[in-house]
Length: 431
Ligand code: SAM
Image (cartoon, rainbow, N blue to C red; front, side):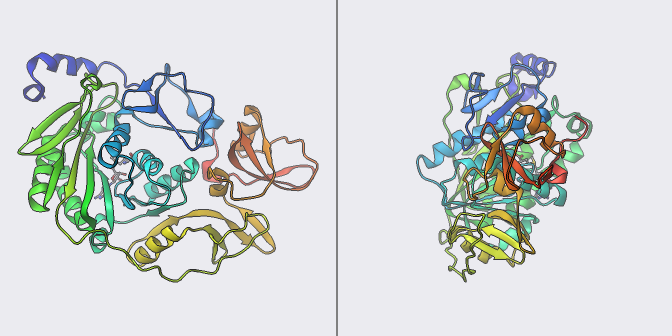
């Protein structure tokens, strides 16, 4: 590092590791609230906010309602990059290849046009579940498919995406002050392993990028072999052109160039955030974005508790909100990838009853016609802990509990008490 960032700045770099990492959140623009706006904004993303002091999110009902996501500030640069490459446009089909737990993926979803489809993928099964949970909680868009696949499965989808984001698994040097495991597990051998893995990931995934499509590649390490050297290798082997970005100097982002490849480093002594590297590439060759055929549309269904729409379809007992754009993508990838979630899950038919799903409670659009009850923090926490919240209700039936008018989850009031439909794995334990 000393040879890379010069002797003068090296001391500052080292000292930055004695300071604690700033804690930040990203406000969900689809679920606006009155709080947190007064906090200092992240320079490159106004909805990114630094917290004055460490906060316990688990007991904040607004976190459970998906009104914000706890995210490290440097990662939010994605929004500025997106603006610089697309302006007011949007890619039609985006892939986030290494998406869990979901910080960059939920941010990307909030930037996409509402008709664009996002495929968010995570290879590790339990992490794919966390990704699904985070997307559902934020409830940003119905045009979402979550897959759990190895990158090599994507090579079959030739020129299917016009935007691919790869936040590669890496040696984690930029995370040393936030994550002790990254520090403990660091070794030269591991850096080499990460570099070889990233090469494989790129080689497997780049066929799926359409001509003129963009690749946004990032890591949280300072290892050149996992960053600019790898990007140079990719540009030579896959006919990519590096895209130069433009950031104001006061943001403290360090621009570098290697044989026509532009890279951007976030060093902890210069930015208010953790270590990050990012580079953007445009693909030069190919036929252009592939357009799949429409495919068969399943019959739409009508359920009294849901607003009438062509978009409500039934798959076995499950009811799903599925748009036409989403269906086209889903039909095409269905037998090629392992889809773990798609559209908005609305609920299940059990006998004569419709049991609403958590995604219906969290989605920012109101797709149901259940009555809503806005509760205070104390009642919200009773509910989020899985208990029977004390509600003052007359009529039996299903209700959506909201906190500051944002959906938390459903209860079924049965007279003297309510059944809590908040998913068991989501419940607050021991707080
Ligand atoms: N983008 C995520 C976010 O913003 O929340 C963080 C992604 S993390 C840096 C890298 C992810 O890549 C991890 O979730 C990890 O499980 C996944 N991963 C590990 N090995 C992989 C491989 N061989 N191919 C693709 N992804 C892999």
